[in-house]
Length: 226
Image 1 (cartoon, rainbow, N blue to C red):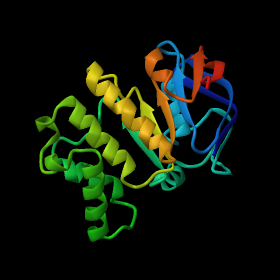
Image 2: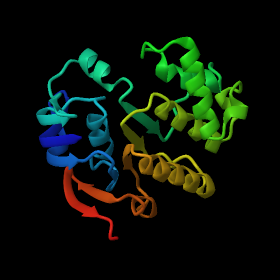
Image 3: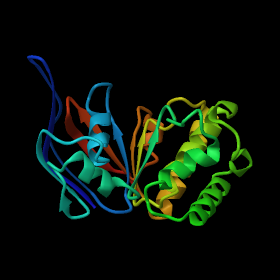
Image 4: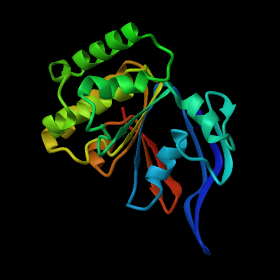
C-alpha cells in the first residue's frame, strides 16, 4: 500500500539545514497496524505527515497505492488524499463554531456526496462511536474523551483505507486513552490500515508492528510476537 525509498526531509531556515528524516526505506502493507516510536525530535511526526501526503520529501520516492507521489503539487496531493486518508490528532482539531454533527460532516464536504447521504453517514458514524446524543453540542460542551471520539468519527466517516494517528491519547486520562486504543484495534480489525505515532511503550505494544526512530532513521522495525 505504502512504499518509501530513500526518503529524506530537510528543513531550511536561512543558512541552517536540519535533517528530520534521513534516507528512510519503508513498506507498509494494507491492513497493518504500525506504531512509530522514538524520542522527541526524532522525526516521528514528520514521517507521519509524509505518509499522509501533508508534506513532501526533499529527496527519495514515495509510492501510495502504486503511484509515485514524490514531487506532486499540493493540489494534486489533496485530491489523492481526500476520502482515502483519515487523520486523528492529539489536540482533536475540532472547529469550535461548529457542532459535533457539522464537524464530522465537514470531512464529506468535497466528496461530491449528496446531502441526504452525508446526513445518513454522519449519523451512523456518531452512533457507532457512541456520541450521537451529542450531535448538536459544540466541542466546548464535551469531555476530552468525547471530543476524541468525534475526531475519530470525522476521520472515519469517508471510509478511508488509511488512518493516521498522531499521539491520539496524549491529551486524555488513562481510562479515555485506553478507550481510544480499543477503538483503534477495532478499526484495524475491520480492515483499515492504521499508523500511529506514540510515546507510550504500552500503546505501541498493541500494534502488530513497531518502528523506532532515532535521528531521522529507522533503527528498529519489529513485528509483535504472536
